[in-house]
Length: 350
Image (cartoon, rainbow, N blue to C red):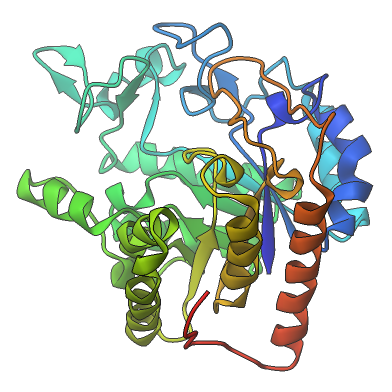
């Protein structure tokens, strides 16, 4: 299974749902399975970063950012995606909101405070503030929000920093959503082991992978991300990365990990590797057991990472056809391997 990640604001010149609908035939031709959208909600104004702001600084979970279109446009996108054989996955950010979210005045008890001011559990991100997630009324609202989007046809959710929210909430949420759609796909942005250790050292919630798999279908592979980055930077570290992959598979068995060369938080892979190594890594990453992630523009060999806070449309005036064909072949190979029940768990080299 391959997930295609889209930042709607920057995917096309128009940056709208309607423009994305026009691109669905091309996306489906890649043989991807899921269209995953970065947060599409209204963005807060207070302490906004950049002109347009971070999509992860959300003002209202049941709204649509007006620059992307209307709710009707979004419903049209969901319908069109389904007609093209694609599932729709939404990005949900339940750990924090913007500093002018609609909930702050309505439900001030839903938030964390330090010295009487809205605060973050960790760090000091200027455009967001953190929920007190153990509040029962807040939990009910968040779960009702998932049900709201599920009833509109959304097939799955990717949850931002899911490790920082207690597993008890996720189990409760999944049980409620499954009443509406038992086939809903649950993807968690799990976190690196060092961050887990740090959070626990300051008595904050930090669920590990084994715990998250109680509620989620797919987790990020950040548990071995250091080994991955080292292998990208220096081919001599490939064997260490392969050993880490094998330990990961032994530890989690048939549970699914999300493998990728880039995402919206990472630099473009084409800017980090020469073309030959890039082509080799494409083959490698799709051989690994699990789910693959393709960030829009990656398939063209684009080197510019879209700005998270501004309008910065993908420039597809120059694309690398060798890179595109390599991704197309790798995605088809992945599907063929799955149909034949082939799982590669030991790879000697790249």
